[in-house]
Length: 291
Image (cartoon, rainbow, N blue to C red; front, side):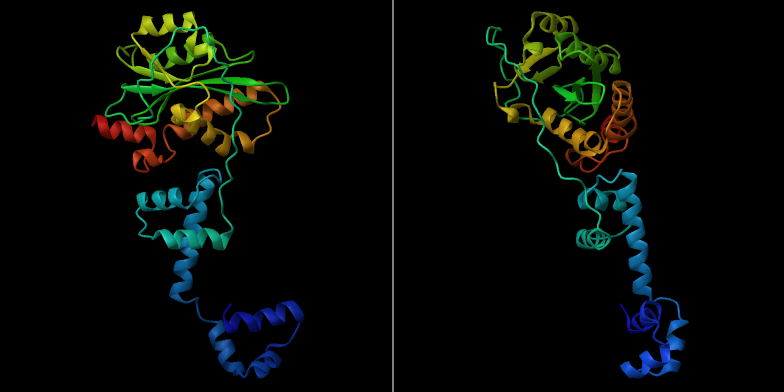
């Protein structure tokens, strides 16, 4: 707080006349009134402008962006700003994304299933779209009861190509519905795509294996009990939990299904900056590579 602001605050908070405060601080009363009429200094105006831009970016993300993504978005918007400046602004305004929670797994291994090799071996990079995909299940709780979500994510852009929800339980049919949606997003031509999952009974079932063969999709599976073997699928659900689910208290299943679909199609795919894409959204990353 500047000296001028301090003198004004004494009058506001304690009712002390400006003249008394000026004499106590050894400041000429005329100097106080002259300085009080001036506009704020340039440094103060720049700081206030930066704070406003940082807050607008933070609020546009639904209060989920930390300083790295705020910094990336501001630079994309043409603002020349440093990492430390953004961090200081967020700390000054008390802006902080929520801490992540460890999610509950739904994997139930089928020990009797035929073995499927791990074709990724934790290499989650892809040189082009439709080369490698990952998928998993998540339970989303509501007051009315749980909703189960199946996912299919393209590893080239981290775009969520397919997803499906069920009100009963995670089944092979639910996984197949997400797989079919992902195929439809590519015009039905997904021959040769590797689809990597865990060894849950849904993915090791005969029905799901037949669905993959029908589409020309090659299955790949990580080891039982090793979340890191399917880390990208786990990471997507962690983001979903962090940025949407933990911030809602849905009363009905329909509310949850609707908001999850809107979050994927209206925020995650087209707008959310992804670190694996050099801080661009999945859609923008795909479009840039295609162009």
